[in-house]
Length: 557
Image (cartoon, rainbow, N blue to C red):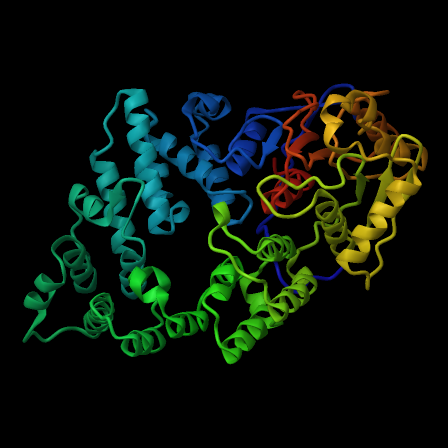
């Protein structure tokens, strides 16, 4: 299928990381580079991507990365770090930043220099820069080495000096500190010497404050760039001290100020939010629908919000994924925030706009161009929820299947149970509700009995064989590139190893087939053979899971 926007775009040619063993078509060995790419993608070198694993990254979990550095393959490591950071391949950026920090402490001079040179390419925002310094400090304690050497000071100086002055002024006023570090700390410790007057002005503002800047530049003939920065910082200071709602609104609209530059007190005013909504990133808007509803915006503002949410132009520009829209919609429907606060009643017009946005945003999914089999097993509890979300496992499975079916031309959706494996048709005009209902109906008709709340006690008799879809494809002579199994029941092998089934399918079809087993209940059971790079397990499901599947399909992890 055609897609007019790229959600997770990959630039340049790609080279497969797979190494086939001597048997030909057998299990694929997992190289250190493959493990590195897994780590950069989702923070683990193993075959399990868990949506719960967003905690601290430890040097003990980077064995393959360290092995490559010991083998003097630093240039290769850094190339992958930059690719994952720049091309949108990673689920989150923290592993790449950690890996960069580790490379910057490597004894090999060439690796260390290349790592610092890559700092501005990987850490493009202040928050990323603060994370880099945090990891440097942690590694200092682990590796017994210092961090504030000449190379780091020069790299930080270059980071600040090579920024566009206006962009830097906005950045330092929106993200002042993070991870225990501030711009003031970094500028002071790096002994940054500003390369031009506008950067010197920003540096003085950060380290000395606005009054010092005023004194330094009053009655002075300033360059045009300096005048622009001065004017911008004056506006930021003015809004920080204003208690006049009308004045704050005017400053936001005239200078495109953002929420992070305002006082908490300002965010109590409806008109302030009305002004912010005009330029607020759409990703932020859909996550804040509950808060906006609590404010009881007027009808004109609500209409503006709805128009923007379902605008094809806005959706395309934001490159927002349909699964992001779905997750935000279900959270909004819930009517309450974290720990039950705040509470709201979902607005019907906003829900209608979000529903429209969900289907329009399919244009943002870039097709991989592979043959997919999406096999769905909904034999678990019909009321189960995907952990960390407000969406049911049934609706999630239907949405995932729909996304693949609508964006990948060669996709087969199957429903399987103990008694049967049957195709499941998702038509172009089918709604998500219709797909979810049909999926539940098909599951009941095929003999799958939901196991209810007690299914964990009886899962050995109720669970499904995730190798069945592979056997189906082999028997029906379909050469499949990627099998994706979706289940709300713990995955368990009953008749055949998925490794052996996958190996047989590779041999008979000639396809470089892979298998992704998605446990939507987030039990966290990995049954993949860690010696076969074509197998991955996903525990839970979130937007990042689509990146993991995409990367595996394209031989990137």
